[in-house]
Image (tube, rainbow, N blue to C red; front, side):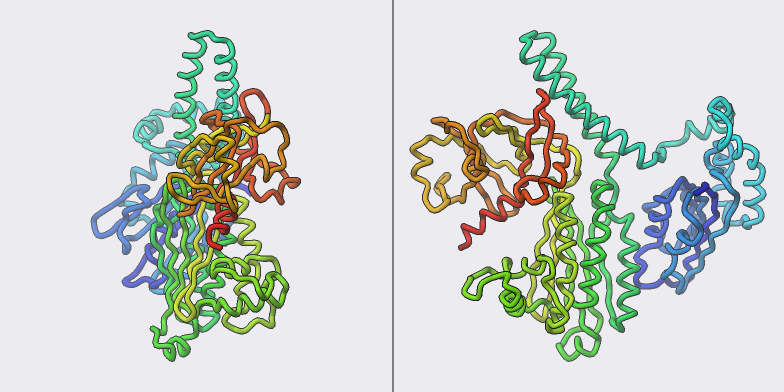
Length: 542
């Protein structure tokens, strides 16, 4: 679709809908659609291109160049109409802001733009019709000529940030990933050569490579709040449709994470929020009978925890009846009647395919529909999800996600001639293990520093043959509050790991999250510590 330049005007009036925490989030969402200049004015206080600190009742004007159609822009304001007004009008075809002199002219208007009518601004835009055509259709020499204009040069010198397309960021990240792989190759060659000068160069290159990697991935991190409007709109619309009163509260909107993760989270979060409103929050009259406020609350909390991002969705609704979940599991032959399970294990049944049915009682009905897909989508981005609930009081869905998807610091280990990578952020300690200590293990436990810890022998559990060395290594890893000991043949050392998908043939490998290419060109498998710890910590709790 062709780029079109629009004028967007927003007046908050004297009141705003309760669901609209701040109009800033509307403009954050618009800013993702293309290039822009944003103006805000509250009393005499003016701000240019500031999408973080404008007053809640400020007036806004935005010049937006985008490939999105007018309907998509208007949809952003769809439920913010009460107590406020907005308009979206086309200024011209083409990317007006690509012409630096035009962009500079609009920036010079500053607060005066609020006294200009649409016709006034269209007249300014029309002066650059020919130059916009040149920018789109003519060759690079013409573009350079526009960039050399003295007025635009002054504007360029004053710019403190630039907008870059996500495609270019993705390309940069891919190149950095390839560079990290080559750096591992260089380290290997330097080590084998024994050349001290080459080794020093390789180490220096590795240091710069790590800094570049960290900076590149910082660029790809965006605040979670840029997507919050769509969730607020959905909760607002669904609660009205169901005749319920729901307040949607968000905390930690400034928390940043990989834009790819944010994109892939959209559907799972929508589904969980829909369940919270539809099947968690009760009708106003039912809440009053239960002694609650007639308005239910759904809270979304986002925060960092170590190298992870935690998202909690909390509703103060009816909760989930764990005993009914257990009975459904027995009926569907997912568990045995005599099987003893913890509350957490019973709630995990909700995430199994086809768990729910139309025959399930009302306060559970629909809770499991599609949650298997939610869990699968979250697992695809190396995340995990669990539920905590109390009947009649609340339900909490907790999602744990990595900060980024592409590169991690790993610990390289060996079993026989095979290499594996353990995410370094989840490694606690490394111990030596003699044959005598190994033979003394009992019931899948070993004692480390006076504590009983479940263990996972990679050689045995992965069915790897070969001769077991006299001395092996124990890598103690953790997830949340649980610890598991991994038995390996040897620890090679730290490794900058570029994660690669293993493809559909490895979909059912529960304990692997991907693969990586080592410096010698061989492939190492990356262990999914979250799943390993979750699985083997069950032994401890039985």
